[in-house]
Image 1: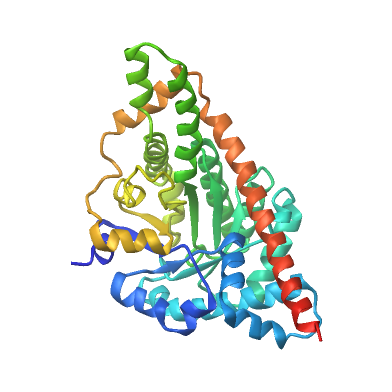
Image 2: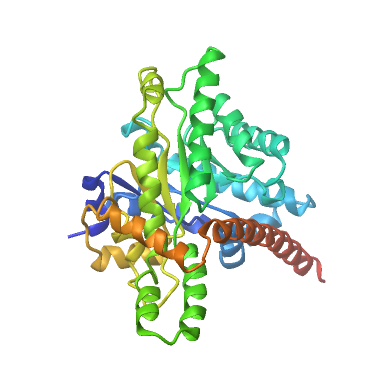
Length: 374
């Protein structure tokens, strides 16, 4: 039995959080679609950095590009990969009536705090790639929220990324709906405007667990120790479960029903950062505990392999919602503000992608300098 392909019966779509040229050209992506039911691909600067450094196909392409800038060279490589992946996924896009079959391309992290720059870059990439099943990734910053609204109004598919907090998720959902409403006012149709809200998981546990571990070293009483251990490794999943409750509320309102009657499809929550970083946790934890209808889980190859081999499927996303609330409340009693944690994670996420983007430029420049040595 293939556990991955059976998740679809629970209403969840599984996407691959990885891309490189070999994956597409070798037929491996097609095989993942056929065998495992993979129905989407996500990318980010860190993924492209790994691909360009490890896949020899990129070096041969770079040799043919001439003396264009590293930024232009990267864009050439990335757009070619995104187009090719979109073409492989197009049958899924078509057969799912535009619900799945997407590939995501991120705007430069340099623009994370520039609304106008993000919109301009997103529009340019949207037209440059020229594929209906493209999603443009926009970080959910204060500048990104109005950018998401404007792009949705223009009919651009958006993957709102780097979401960590329930509050920011609600802002993203509002931007999505108000963008669709503006599109209708402008005479456009919302029918094929797709969006996901990428809600990050494992990074929250990594951050919160470190804070809890510090507290555990300081406590002396068994009661406090037990209380701290009761939320260890559980905050990320509880946070996601409560975000899903917001999803259900938002997309059942009369306001949403009016949009749905015009052909709009809901902005699904997408669980991102679902590779387990703590080796003491199950390697399938962030898939098994977040299975529910109208959601997406994008996972790295190793996590997908693990779930294919020994993952367990159950309708876990709405299990014990009171327990999830209790976890969040108990965290507050320890003086740990999840808002502060998620604010820092957003800053760190942008910084990491910014560094990956710079590393891509360095890698491209280094490959060129090696070719120019006599």
